[in-house]
Structures are given as C-alpha cells and as structure tokens.
Image (tube, rainbow, N blue to C red; front, top):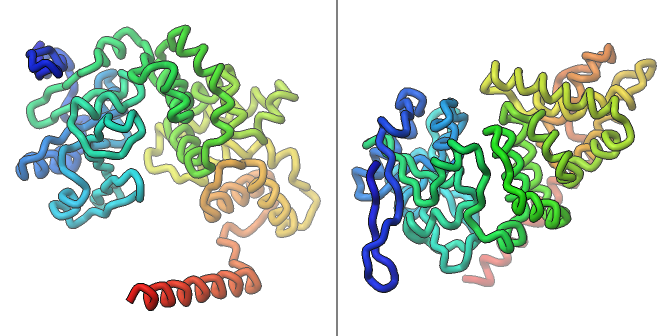
Length: 380
C-alpha cells in the first residue's frame, strides 16, 4: 500500500491518503467503460487530474459493474467544454459538464472547495473535494490509467466492513442537505451495510426536513431508486425509517392502512429489480408501472368507456405520484400499459395536447419572446 503525503497549516508533512494498488483493490479494468477511460486520458494529456469517483468506485470494489461512471477533475467547466466538443455545461449554481458518447452521458465535475462548507460552489483541490462528499464509501477516487484507488477517508475499510460512515459532522450533514438521508438508506441497502446507531438517530430526528426538498430533487432520487436494481430493499428501509412518506405520500397512505397493499407493492418493486437487471436500458415509464399498478387496480372501472377511464386514471395518478414529477409521455405509457394489462384496451399512442391548452402555451411563448426583446432593447 502506498501513502500520499501533503503539508498541514504549519508546513509539516502529514499523511493525506492511502493509495491502493491493483493487487490490493482488485478492480477489474474490463468492468470500466472505455469511454470513461478515454475522457480521463484526454484530461490527463491536457495537464489536468481526473478520476472516476463516487458510486462507480464503490461498485467496482464490491465486484459489481457500475451503471454510470462519474468523473471528477481539476479542470474547470469552461476548459472541459473546450477539450470535448461532444459536451455541454449544465447547471446555473453548481456547474457540471455532460460529455456525450452516443446515448451514454458521462458527468464530469470540477473539484470543489470547502471554503463555504460542504454545499459551497467554489472550485478547489482533490483533498478539499473529498471532504464535501457525504459518506466514506462514496468518497473514493480511482485512476484507471495507473490502476490506483486514492482513499482520504478510510472508505475502502468501511466498504469491506459494510459500514455507512459520514464524512460531514453529524450536526451538519442533514441540516445542510436533507437528501443525504435518502442516500444513506440507499447506500446501506445497495451494499448490505449497517448504519451506525448515532447516524440512525440523526436520520430519525431530521426526517421532517425532507418536506422542504424541491419536487425536482425528489424526482431525481426516486428515479435513482427505481433504476438501481435494489428498489424493493431501499423502499423497505425507507419505510422503516419513516422517510418514504416524503417521497411517495400517496402510496404510504395505502401502505399504512393495508398490509396487503404493502406486501404487493414491495413484491412489484422486487419484480422491477429483476427487470432492471435483465434490461439495463429500461425506460422510466416501465419503472413507473411498479409504483402505480396496485393503485390503478383499485381505481380503474373495468366496465367504463376505455378513453374516459384512461382520462380519469391518468389525472388521479398524476396526483398520486406527487411530489414526483415524471415526464408526461412516461407517465402516459405507464398508465396506458397497466390499463391494457387489466383488460381495459386503450391506444398506446401519445395523447395529443388539447387545442385550448396548446393555444395557451403558444400565447405564453409569444409573451415571453416579446418580454425578452424588450429587455434586450433596454440593455442596448
């Protein structure tokens, strides 16, 4: 095992990180997307540090093939954009770069500083970036060129010990970002790891903070769960910690009042997990079926006129699945597919936007365009 040294505030040499060689970490290089390696090689050739980070490294260490490969680098977004023409910068406050290879998207982030705490947005160094990450098992950096794992926080030991340990102090970790509670549960379920007692206490104490998380972030977390291949285990743990009510309050109302509904709901998620494993490119609409199937079975009238039944059920499902806000076409697919499975035959073609609604949309766009032109004139 190698050691990476650095200097402390007094100028003394101190150990910063453990560096695991390929004989020690045993990561199989063939499990890594060749495009991810090419991105890192390209950044290195331009003089920048670059590593595979986060969940991908965790999955590789436990012998799994990661679904996504996120990359962290010392290059700033504008530099990354210049190096890769097949990329675009996203985000206003927290700027990232998406690099496109066919249908695959690789997310590249710049090392962040700890100057403004764990949620600031200033660029920094790798040894600062690691302390902004939430849990040790998710804070490892893998260099596929030299086949080295860089570990600043004993994350490798925690993965091997099956323990979810926070990096950020307990009194701050969830108040700064409540979504970290969902992640802690998710990581524990996905790696069959334990959650330390005091971390459990903080999750239960701070659960109510999830009420104030934006629908877009809730949608993002639910998507990660249903695409994970571990949805049933994750949801069971979220229910145990009383967190799932903030993700799917509609479903929880039925789960709390009916043990049968809960049993079938979890069974459907287990079937989804098998589908995800068998079909890596599964669409969101197919995953949504597992969240909606039992509810639709309760509210759909098998004797009704199919199109009227669909209109009613779609509207109810849009409300039921809140605060999640899936794309219209994906929710339409899920609802129509379930209705057809129940013997209520509806067309699988997309529902057209009503003329009145379309008129309102066009009117809104025209107003927006005029306002933009007026603003430009004022600026000129």
